[in-house]
Image: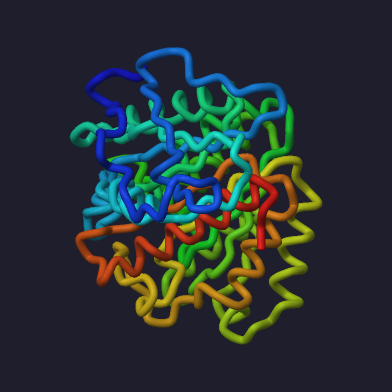
Length: 333
């Protein structure tokens, strides 16, 4: 249940940025963003046929702590808003850009925070909004998808993860973590008697044990290694994505910022000197997925502002959100 303890509306003054003027051609996101308090129903209504994007933060790094990573991702949502405020408005004026605040992990109560996140995601979807979640650790995945599955009902839901890691670990003594989300989803699929559709892009052999590769094989995970991106193997990447998309009705898209080379993404729990580059093939693959029209919701995860340099990681994560918003509005490059 969403309460004042596990949820906070967006604070006044968070959305700021450069102001060039007030004409339609000069507007930036901070000038058009609206805010909503999920403790106060209903959400701002959308008119028939109107598009709305809702940002929702997940202020949690308890999953990162349990996964023995470097904490700090709970501050990611604030850092992302600080960067996104100055983005120019390139979408139609009737598109609603909404900030729905942050779900908070109170203390070590991760499972409760994930349940609250699922409730918030479901509320946004039921109100007609396209949710874009701001992490937070990659424990965001399980809560996010739990809400999506309730909404998608009988539709085949697929999960696409840009990540150096499978995040398919078996939970340890403390329970779920930032590395267990897709294992949890696989078990839920078995319980429900439904197929588990998971595509991981950017997987690093030196970041996953043989056991994790074995679990991925047992769960019939499709993956493309980082080498395919390093070597610009477009045929392999595009074919894997297209085949995966043909098997599902809707897609949850998540990007763990540790998939990128540390020069571009130093502000993460586990940096990768040999991560993939955020341009070229990766950007083409990202746009291929968004262009399918099947993405129902998306998030970015593992941004740790305390470890960032010159806001590089925050700016990169925000640029991916910009791509998501533009694609949803039909204004993609």
